[in-house]
Image 1 (spheres, one colour):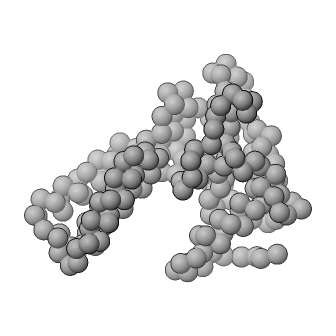
Image 2 (tube, rainbow, N blue to C red):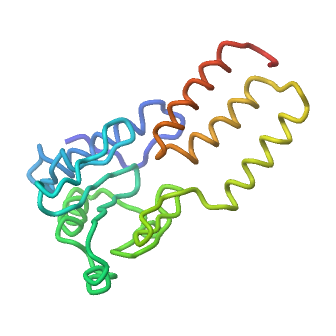
Length: 193
């Protein structure tokens, strides 16, 4: 087994290696694996898992460096009954990570809540929305306005602005794709733009 006590800072492959390990623990390949279905994994670089009723239960999962997530779609009445408890899938993943001595962040743990903050987004399970917090958006708008008001900006400053917007809107794939084009445009210019 590959083991990592501390994820090395500055090592360009660190996140990818840790993600791979956590995904193996979540899916299969290890005796301790949680056996979560790959077709239910939510990843930013892949299509969203099908929530078609043909699959029965409506849930998906994701893991990150120090976090795990199981998201379910259930009727409101049921959500009130199960609020604050762990689903069977969440229990399986928690058990598998613990057996492999892979830590997760206790401060990021959310168990069956109607609203939460996940990966920098305010998630409202009742309204069915996920968005950046208003305060964060206002800070990013103000920063962009300040830099753009100068009429010229260093490439790195423009990339900083776009990077913040990418972080804010990674779940909005059409806007995310546009920001990818903006990034490529900025990279085409060196120095000041």
